[in-house]
Length: 371
Ligand SMILES: Cc1ncc(COP(=O)(O)O)c(C=O)c1O
Image (cartoon, rainbow, N blue to C red; front, side, top):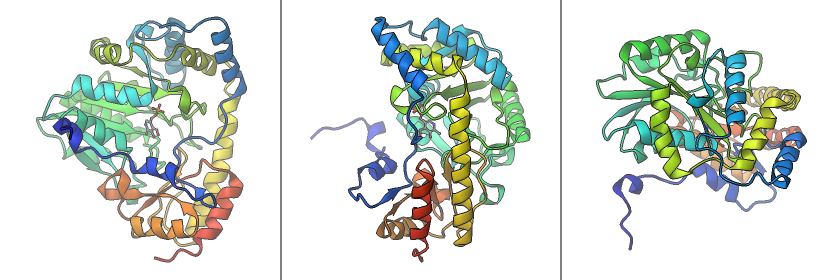
């Protein structure tokens, strides 16, 4: 029998992955966290082109300079953030960026403020670095938007970072500008870092996304291509922060992955440089589905407000685990909210990265669910 490292022993594999493995061909899967669209053709073509032209070797550790330049332009234009291409590392998904931050920044016993509920990787990455994750209890009454009040009283002299995720997985909430600003100022005052996971930035409806990197140099900004351009399998994202932080992150990146996939980097370059119409059309389709699922759930009496971003909705169903079981009996798959933290107990997460027709059918099936 092997004796794994103590820090690994306590980590559980994701419950969400299990949703992919269920063997029920009649079930409509509203558990999946990736766009159901194909990667836009011009992006795929650029990857084929990169292969044909022999761009199959290692790239610089930080990533292709052209790509980092394009990311730097994007950050200026979309986020009002000025960064030098040398302060950007292209990563193997946002997943690698998160892991890298935890490994490079957290000492044993350091505390990290993690939104509760939130994406599972945050807590796992903190614990894999022997850090302690401290819940910021997000409030249903405030549509689970993180505020300064949620974090302020969690700070101790051991606090190293605060994690922000807007638009959010699993709730779809988008933080207000005033909250992003006040948490940024607080991070400055207290000399705490912010790790801002902005992977859903582009999937947003009628409101604006703000990055803390606009307001503080203590922010580490993570963004990528998986969700906005339906490129989950390309495994491509990036992280940017002030230079002294990037130099430390690079040590983890260099010895962990050397560099992100060369051909995926060419795909990402095309995604940024060419027309953004593909993003617009995916987002407008997501919006129709968001409206359908919000109205249907509310009509059934499952309380939720209309999420402003991502492709998730997080209704209050009283008992998340029981609801998931009943939904499954009716051939609908969703994820218990508790998978995202203790504050998700009464909730379930539906992903609407599935066709309009399937969502309509799923909602009809859910009318039979009584708990
Ligand atoms: C909030 C959040 N951050 C990061 C990721 C990981 O993204 P990537 O595919 O770029 O590793 C996900 C994927 O579901 C996510 O929901």
